[in-house]
Structures are given as structure tokens and as C-alpha cells.
Image (cartoon, rainbow, N blue to C red):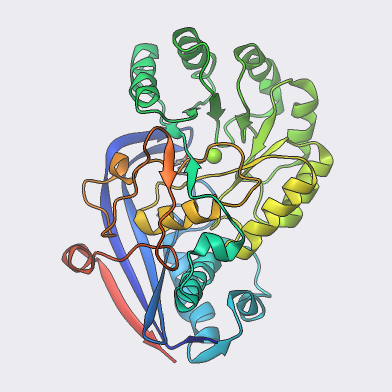
Length: 369
Ligand code: OSB
Ligand code: MG
């Protein structure tokens, strides 16, 4: 049985090794909320992917931690569940706030997999021992800098290059990259920066052989994406717009895209992520695992989810050492030639670097029933 006895909420701040510019802003550090669930002498870990300000989706760290503390934890602490899916009723009945909910759900999956002494990926139904990964590259100063950073990552063996774009910086970096690397798997991500009025500019991307264009239109839209998709030959990939398996069904049924970016926290946890995976597979739509610049904890969760069979396109879970000088976990998570090994230990297969965390923690609270 999955008995949840106590919880720890920890917040750390990690400097990013690169400047990450997207259509919604520039990031140079990451505030990482961590949750530890204790039960049966074991610990399950998760990472919140909410951000300081609601730029990507509507969730924020402050709002999410309030819900974890005051709404979700009181419903599970001191209680016993049959398995993590049995938590769904306790965590159900609330609108939105999937990333906050996912913190609790994902830590419960890790704890449960450790209790059963199996890797989380295996428990979810995955079979891969390594997963294909690419990189998501922020907006650079000019074409030459873009080609440089792409070259560095192509040389490291990453299986796909994704360029962040925005209106006024789209065709230029894509053309320069394609001219320098005619054969790489190349994609772009607009993070909702365009409208249907930009159809002409987006259609101009069709000639560059992109695998997909990620989330060009509004974060909460499906209908305009369907209109745009009918006017483009490049498949659209939905990211921000999908927070449930029902969203995925509606998006694919509407023809709003042909590919889904699955971020486990954006859809509320592993059980819903697997349902997004399954429904996409039923539509013949490939999925891949997105990232939110996670520390080792979230990164390990992403790797395990990516072992499911319909994750047929490379994900964003690149080497942890790209992001952090020191990570919050003890184990390295390093891709070799674009293949990320799946940790083999129980659960997510990584352990917290408690000493490092204690030295930098901005918050550390314990909760019991
Ligand atoms: O849209 O996929 C995105 C990071 C923060 C918010 C949104 C996105 C991203 C990334 C980074 O693209 C992927 C990663 O390296 O983790
Ligand atoms: Mg995206």
C-alpha cells in the first residue's frame, strides 16, 4: 500500500549556464520547487515546473506552493492509497493548476515505484533503456551566433535541434541553420507569439523541411491552430494548449496539429501524461517529451516517461550539465550521442544531494498529517 506519512517542500535557486531567450522573455536562473513525500522508510521526489511569473502558462510558484500546502497535501498526508492512480480522487475536482497537482502526483509515483523496487518507466509501461534527445536553443544575437550554437550541439550528437523564434526572428535563423546543416532534424518553437495574421510568414517556413512548428498561436487556442494547419504543409506541434488528454483528443480531432509535446507537469502528472500518449497514438500522432529547464529531479521524471512507445520523436531532456554547474541530485544525467540512458535504480533512479540543497535552500518546510 502507498502510505504517505510526511512531506518536505524545498525551494532552491540555480544559475543557468546559458542565457535562455524565448518569445516571452529572457531567463538566466531557475527557481526550483521540490517536493519529497515520505512513506515506509522511503522518499519520493518531484519538481514543480511553475515559474516565478505566469509567462508560459497561468501557473506561478507562489500560487502552486499555496495549493500544494493548503489544498493537496492535507488530502493525502496520513492516508493510504492502493497506488498512485488511486490519488486521483483525492487530487480531483479542482480546476486547472496542473503543475501544482503534478508535484504531488509525480512524487507519489516515484515513492510507489521505489516501494515496488522497479524503475518508474517500467511501472508506467515503458520498455526503452535509453531515449533519443535533442536540444531547445534560445534566441541568439544573430544568424552567425545561431549557426555556432547549433553546430556545437550537432557535434555533440543531439538528435534534433529546436530553435526558439518570434515575429521578426524566424525565417532568418531557420534559413541560416538549414543552409549550414541541410540534413539535421530541425524544428521551431514560437511559444504563442503569432496570430493568424502572420500566416504568410509562417507559411514561408514550409520550404525549410521542419519536422514541426511548435505552438505558434495562443496558449489557450485550438481552433485557430486548426485553421493555420490547413494552410501549411509543416505539421504543427501543440505544447501550451494541451493540459489534458481531452485537450489532445479535441486538438487532434480538429486538425489543430499532428504532433503533441507532452510535459508531464503541464498535464497534471504521469497518469494523465500516459493518457495523452495513448490518445495521440490512437490518432497516429507521434509525441515527444518537452522540458521546462528542469533540475535533475524533473529531468529524471521526463526520461522515465519518454520510455513509452509512442515517444517516437526526440525530446528536450538534454544533459543536465548543459544547464547546471551543480545539480540537486547526486547522479549525472548525461546524453551520449543524443541518447539519454534511463536510470536503472528503483523509482526515478536518482537521489537528492542533500548537502548541496541545504547550502542553498531558500525554503525548507516539513508537513505531517
Ligand atoms: O516551450 O518548450 C517550451 C522552457 C521553458 C518554458 C517553455 C519551454 C521551454 C523549453 C526548454 O523549450 C526545454 C528544455 O531544455 O528543458
Ligand atoms: Mg514549447
